[in-house]
Length: 529
Ligand code: GDP
Image (tube, rainbow, N blue to C red):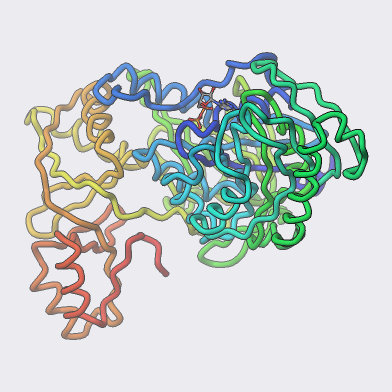
């Protein structure tokens, strides 16, 4: 197959959802339809079980699963689909943000009863900022939930999206009779035998057909016709280009658990979802069909076996072909490296591959040379943007609890930070190290892993920080900036890339500082150029 054909047939996407909305179930059903797995239950949920925060076996279990489900690939209708796993748990939101830099589109899963939930809001906002094309899937239609119009309203308002329903439910919960497929102009009737892998459906092609009255009853048929009339009146007609530009989001309804509405979703997805998209580097835009390979690291996974410190770096291929045993430039190190056993991912296994294409993810064995955000090329000095750090929510000093193991401790901290488990800040005042995380759970993960993988012990000490703000002076030489550096010395730190960060202790003090030093910009993310 030609290089361009390989690009054209790839779809790399992520499923985002608040925990429990049905991401794992939907993933599994997509794999079932793709023939990649034989039975339900094969995809493990990467969820942290409730109340398991101190259960370290649970953390290890979760890490194991998260390696296994990082990338799930399958073929459907000649299309190669790569699903990138995005943890829904809020303590791992940063991991999800980074994964979103490697997807070309997303499917947003919403629970019909719970509506738009907090984690979905945050993740959709990130996608919106990057104009990532989104398809919305309203799940659990077999349960009582919100009225479809009410829910569509909520999606538009809370998620700031412009929706265009491509299917519409007939009843819900106990009364759920099926869905009308606006995209294909037919009806699929639901026969509520839950837990069947693939639901059999009856198709009807004409909305005015009296056949519908026979199947769902006169009153349901009337209601459906009225509702479809309303849909046509209220919502914009689906437009593929608008969707690809991130301005319009098609909506499907269904029930992942019952495999209902999944085929419709998948057929539409392979039809409209974007093939690998061009990506911006600091230097220029890079097109997937350029013949020279480029790619970037969006995720690093430590080996689960503490005796082998090898890690797996996940690279998204942006352009060209990635070939085994070929020397590539590690741009940050200015060094050529080659890989004898790059892994490609499938539904239930990973395998060494000779060649991968734009849109694909390869896993590279790494002994500590990669950091999240690193770029690989065939020789060009390119740096991919867009794997920013966000201000953490929690901050604690990290102290060495075993003076004989300080080397191990610092090595461990360094490597865990490269993996993106948390962020490290070093105070300008006294060189003390501060760990910033999105969730409190990460502190336990770090402590546990330092001990078990590096043989080092640490303790934490609370530090009162409201937000970490990356500092950008208009002119580093002006008096105002010099005064800021002097007066706020106590609150300044360097991040892992030696960028200056202001650790504001309250929202009030941040405001005051902004007012006092108007020529300085304070950013909540590390990437602002
Ligand atoms: P995740 O946290 O988003 O990965 O959610 P899961 O896929 O693990 O689903 C959470 C729970 O919702 C599980 O108990 C599923 O069986 C259930 N669930 C998923 N889809 C449906 C559905 O369509 N209908 C019903 N009734 N339950 C569902």
